[in-house]
Length: 109
Length: 118
Image (cartoon, rainbow over all chains, first blue to last red; front, side, top):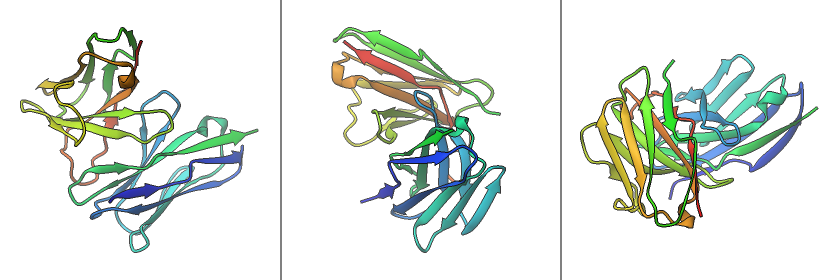
């Protein structure tokens, strides 16, 4: 079966750095997405990786290793507004998005 | 950027009634729209994929007669939950794209509709 694993919850301090990991086992791979979802709201797009390596976008960076079936989202200079769930999603060989359950990130002052 | 409007944002209904949720792409033509449901602390579950002018493709386990999807135009898709029951209470989210499902195209999500069936 297809599976996306990410930690259920993480806690970090304002101003610090946090890394949210995602491992996947899917039938084929056509890219990996990270979305941010605040409670009761729809997901918003953060990043897309299809090749190995690090993609940096401001305070957020996303890394992919296809051989390891692994990605991480790195958030720097954490702000209180970064408190949200972070969803990892992979497009399989049929271009269907397989979603992880999300990681709830709690930021403390 | 692309904007998807979803309405209503929340609805409470009695068991046995039907509820319609609308999803509109405001500044682009949505060739494909997706309907998801999400239970608390769980991942998004794809219910169906709809392409303009054709019948929706439902995921396994989703009752097509209960969850009616209409995608009559390039900017509007509707989801009707027929004869709703308390177990249908959930967060329903639509998303749309104008570039099909391949490649790096990013899905734009509506704000979601929280359905509570009493």
